[in-house]
Amino acid sequence: MDAELPIRDIFAREIFDCDGNLTVETEVLAGEGIVGRVSVPSGADTGAEKAVEIINTHIAQELIGRNVFDQKEIDKALIRLDGTKDKSALGTRAVFSVSAAAAKAAAAALKLPLYRYLGGVQAKSIPVPEVNAAAGVFLIPADGLPLRSQVKMCMEISRLTGTVSSDIREMLNKMVRAAERAGVQAGKDMAFGLNASAFQWYDRERKCYRFPYEGGTKERDVCRTSKEVTAYYEELTEEFPVSSIEDPLDCEDWNGWVQITETLGDRIQLAGDALFRSDPGRLEKGIKAGAANAVVVRAGQGGTLTELADLIKKAQEAGYSVTIGSNTGETADSLNADLAVAFRAARLRGGYPRYMEKYNRLLRIEEKIREIS
Image: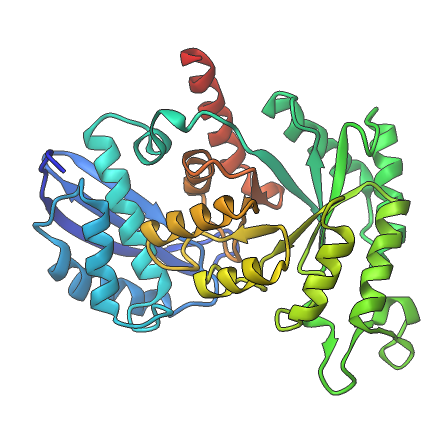
């Protein structure tokens, strides 16, 4: 890297996330008046107070004076300093917030938007928004519409849906009717996505998947094998315009994943979130086995910005669709929108309606891309 601009200071503070819990905001300062600022979701990582202390001492001492434009070296230094595979020494929040803040500072120094700094001239496609409408159900607008129209349509359907039901068929029927009232044709203008989170329902003693809401009580639940779960979702996708299912099976049920991918993979997106955990080793295993055809990536879950980019590239080269997902305890930071465009993700999940910052940032990026097209 020819350009040189040393990191002058690194500072972290505690801030509140969208739920009022404490999380971390990090600033990387370089040159005169150049600041890269990133706040990260609270998630379930090391406490915010400890993360702030780690950033302001150990990480700052390691990185101050390094070239802010050399992202790979910054990230290598963070990886070496942590010394663990899962970033448990420093914590994923501390590592990712510093890594991303350094990239923001570098972009600011060059007077470039972050998506352009990270993605170059090829960063010119806008991901399709995945909008959470209810627990476990999100709306996926048809590609080709302007982003504003896509998000507005999903928000209207979400508002018209009304009371949430724990029965998936009842919930989908309510959403189909809500779409009709909004003048939207489900299956043509938009489709449904399901976050099955099957790891929560897998009964390891009985070696089956519990569907408690079908029986009404835990004692009367419906228990299905992997094969029966595949048949269940096959029937559901024939009955409703479901185009994506996330974590339909347990994260250790590899044989079941291969089976459901062989059965439904040419019709719908089968996304691994808990299955892959933003872990390159698990992703490689899934690719070799033929498990899933899409991956949900959560910024910060896998460590540095470089590691995130490498994971996405690996998935895309294997033909997997990539969704940049939201996290527990999101903040007002719109970083994920820039990352989705920079790394050419197919979809961006901004979270529940209170997380509109990501979509608003995406609207501004869409405007800029149109200006230079």
